[in-house]
Length: 271
Image (cartoon, rainbow, N blue to C red; front, side, top):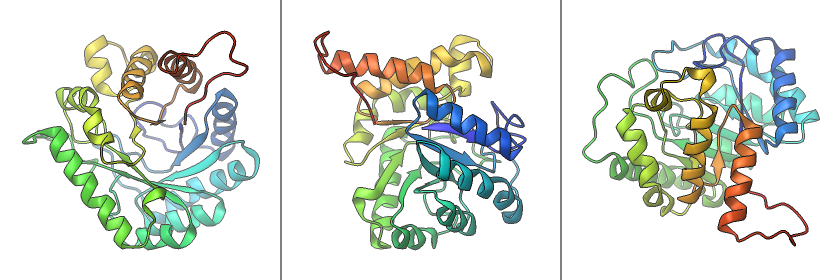
């Protein structure tokens, strides 16, 4: 899942693709590098981010979704917590709704997803982007996140979304310390045991910087390492900025786990 942020203030690439043509070009580049999904977002969810209006978010993302849905060889995901943005993006060609609030911000979004036939990703986040890093605490981060995701999965199913169309995301970096993030990766099998595809979004996150001492743009190797660990523990969807490097690393990991040999007539693939 390649990240396309149509925002001025995202933590890693804010402002680079605010122009629709630049965002479309970036999406096409990521698809060419191996992205199966392009995740288009028009509102930053970095720690401390301020919300944007619905009209502004629509203005940013709809033209990008529409053009990439027509031309890119990848499925389109809309990264939003707003009902009307999700509805408009689906009409423009998005087939996945990635909601960092897990339908808490707009509960009606579940029925929109259900009626449209789209897939959805429900993520765990403590609080909201402006406050989520204010002294986050858990009794047990893995158990607490698992319980939350099970509850949101049950809600979505009750609202008519077929379980097979739901993905879950433990929310690496969303209301969590570096220790919390590492514990989630270490014990990811417990989240995987819920039985739905697990999305991991560790790309260029600050906890990688704390470990390596690298700035956002220098965290590709750390991102690759985190995703290979997540793959080994059962994750199947990887939300990243650096698609080519991550794709190569996951292919090698998949080949190793699957005992791929030189006689194989095609490269292994991952979701």
